[in-house]
Length: 343
Image (cartoon, rainbow, N blue to C red; front, side):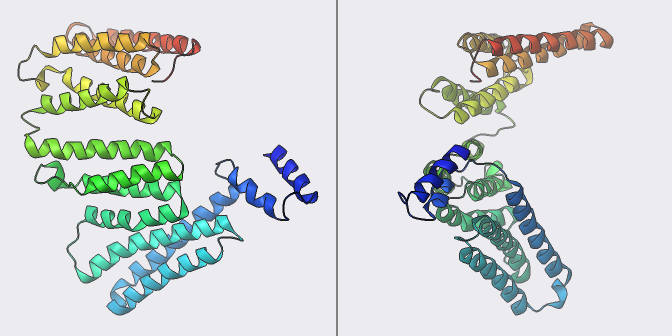
C-alpha cells in the first residue's frame, strides 16, 4: 500500500491523474483489516444504539403508542440520513451510522410487535429483520450486513414448526439464493458463503422432517447428510473451498452419528459402515486432505473410548487416549509439512 500511495502521489503531482483521484483509487485497493478508527466507530455505534434502546425500554410504559412509533421512525431515518450525508467525506463514520440504523431497525421490529401485539414470533421477527437489511447490503455492497441477513434467516429456519416437519418453508429458497448470488456479486466472503451453505442444509432438514419421523428413522437423516457431504467433497474442483470444507464437516458429523449401533434399525450395520467410511477417509488422506486426518482421528478415538471403558481401568483409558492424541497431532503436523491441502 505504501508503494501504491507513493506512485499515485507522483502521478497526481505530475498531473497525469486529476487532483484527489489518488485517494479514490487507493480505496479500491484498500486491504481489508479492522483498523483502530473503524473499531472505535463500530463499537461507538453499537453503544449508542444500546443506550437509545435502553432509554426507550426503561420508559416504555410511560410513552404513548404514537410517540413510541414516531421515536423509532425518527431515529431510524435520522441515522441513515446522517450516514448518507457523510458517505463521501467520512466513509468509515458513514458505515458505522448505517450499522446503527440497522440496529434501530431490528429493535424497532421487536418493539412495534410488542406495542401492537401483532403475534409475530421471535424467529419471524428475525425474518423481517433479514428481509429489511438485505437491500441495504446490496446498495452498500457491505459483506457484514449480508452476513447478518444470512444469520437472521438461519434463526428463522430453526423455528419449531419447520424442525418438527409441520411445513416446508419453500419461499426461503429464494432468499437463500439471493444471499448466495449477492455474496458472489459484491465480493465473496467465506463467512457468508459458509452460512449460506448451512442455510441450505437447514432447509434440507425441514424437508426431511416433513416426510419422515427423524426420531424413528434417524439413519435416513444421517445417510442423507452423509451423501450430501461426500458429494461436496468429491466435486471440490467445481465449487469454492469453503463449501468443500462444509462438505467434510457434514459427512464427518453424519458418519459419527451413524457409527453408533442405536442409529440403525439393524444393530450390526454400523460396523461395515464404519469400516467403509474409514477406508474412504484413507483414500482422501492419500489425496492430501488434512481435514480427513482430523476426522479419522475423531472416529478412531470414538471407537477407542467406546471399547476401552468396558475393558480397561480408567487411568489406562486416559493415558492411552492421551498417547493416541499426541500421535494424531504428530501425524497431522508431519502431513502438513509435506504441503497437503486442508480439503
